[in-house]
Length: 305
Figure 1: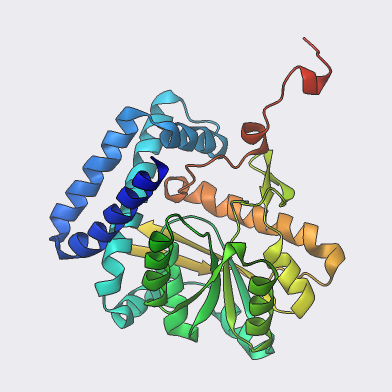
Figure 2 (figure 1 turned 30 degrees about the vertical axis):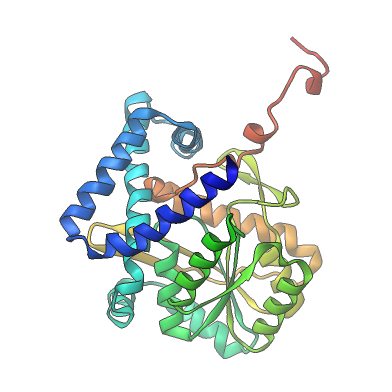
């Protein structure tokens, strides 16, 4: 049954890349908007988890406000997928000019390359991170990033081909030491690396404070900075009504292995500030808060109560 589901998933994405780019924009907007609203009404597992995550981001929201935020969040997520299916056919030079016109903090990125040790750009699953990558490729040339190996393999290869067409070099998240060595080489060649850092896929991430609770964040970005002297830059993006916002934040200094934990916490603090400013654009439909992943039980508290 799982193999059938994998084949159906692969076919669905393949159809999306063929069909959506040919739809008139108003039709695509209406279709993805309808799908998002339907998901909000059905309250599936991903929608319920998004609601729990956003309740931490906007703790003052009442039920009606949270309902509206979840609906807008799902519409934002739908917009990401609509754009993902359209990006391969877009004029990337024109896209770069549009994003670059309002991008802020680009001088921080340029200073990193001038220093000569490469740049590590740490991102969250917010807005359209593929647009951020496409902008970077146009600005600074090809860069390396790490991607989860999806199933089936044919679907993973579709995403590799899609992102390579935008100027990404894709390395597998399950590549272990080989992937890490490649990232080190790219930084030592004064190139850029992008890492998505708000979701820990390994259960080996560092606990950090995040919206009054704890999540585990991958420490790879801070570790690479400590090992290579590369500049660690939070890199955030969000949707605007007619485009995308993008910001390259100032450097987080990680002067050695002893500062990896504090550097990772500093990343979490900046991410939290940006997510709180654009909560509907944080596309986190998975469990990331430790209290969701490892619920407190009576046994774990000594049976109190």
